[in-house]
Image (cartoon, rainbow, N blue to C red):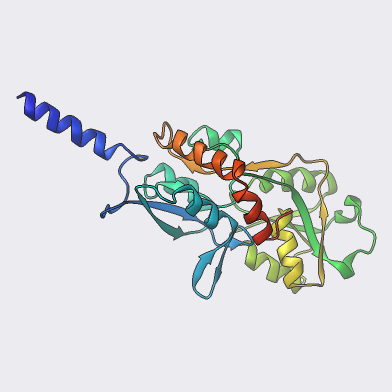
Amino acid sequence: MKFLFLTILHFLFFITTSCDQPQNMDDKKKLVIATSSDNPPYEYIKEGEIIGFDIDIIHEIFKNTQYKIEIKNMDFHALIPSLVSKRVDLVIAGLSINQERAKIVDFSIPYTQANPVLIFKKELHQDFSLEKIQDQTIAVQIGTVFVEMGKILSEKYNSNLFQVENSLFSIQDLLIDRMDYIILEKFQAQRFTEIYPELTFYQLENFESSSFAIAMPKNCPMKDEIDNAILKIKKSGTIDKLYEKWNIY
């Protein structure tokens, strides 16, 4: 009977060493990490592979550990529901900490800061001010913290707010004049202006910056391990090298 109890105890310890049981464990325990690859330079697809600042961060966190990483791509608005329903183990996707999300998931300590901007065509405005968005169309990505910012701006300036599923598609809409403005994160907007020189952006000074963090299930036993790894990445200077690699300044 004692042997049976110890066997069961050992089994329970084994399956709870990550946030619930990792998906499809092999020699190493597989962690399924969800992301949304429409967010350069944080995560995007190049030559069929998901790459970016966030992807490098998650690999650094779990380098030389017992875990094997599988990156799973999905729409941004599906990330938190997939985590809550335990279809994935963690989420990293330029995901900001906010009170609404924190009610249903836990977050790591922040690994970087994010600032909101409006991106638009240069030809639209030479000297931009927020009054120029009066009666214009503004796009925001569903599920992001930018939705609330968009609502505030649209109410104040009588703008038309559209919620879109994919920021890459919204950029195309911007280029063909189906949208006038998009609210994005600063370095995401900066990357798009490098690709499309006809675009520019304006920083929304009246809105606070947000913190990007890794989302995990409530009471995840890996939280301390992940937080310590983020601190190590910062202290060692690794994160500064990644900022330089992905042109995030």
